[in-house]
Length: 252
Image (tube, rainbow, N blue to C red):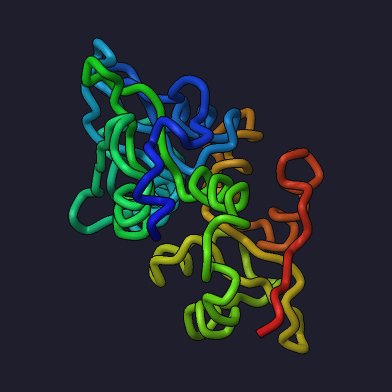
């Protein structure tokens, strides 16, 4: 769209400051607490001096690590370095995209609609400055909706959505839910009751939030195996005010 080509990254509602992890001293437990505290899906991993982006760690990487540890027969979760987890959910090791403040928004849209899912914004000096996520671009588009001709006629929800929701029974364990998320390579799954009706949604972020609330994270594997996915999601919604939104259903 012409309007998006005319707008620059600097025009987007970029987050103030960059929440990041450090390669030198970052660990799984600190990463979990950082993501949960800022309610982020991911965080860039920077060099010790904070000037170079070495990769990104997201909630799906945490899910993949938990599933991998359980598969090896481990009974306790260890606080391993972030380099053991970073990019684990992506066979290629993850994609790190970088843009400048002067790049057009349509270029950024092409990037974040692909495997990268987000892009690190570099300052004038070429250092990590902020981040562009799909949510940031969506906020921008919503604010400019009256000027984006044709966007209101882009199709129905049925035409835009992917086919087939990945579902799990409400009585299944939380661990089973995250194993399903990992095996199907999706961000979230629908929790259904006996009649097959959706009662809630469980996402990779739910694992991060749940782990962040555990005083002893080393015992997480047993707790996830003995807790139903419904109870885990309900507890997250109760304790985390930013997770208070109910499941939204769109008509086809």
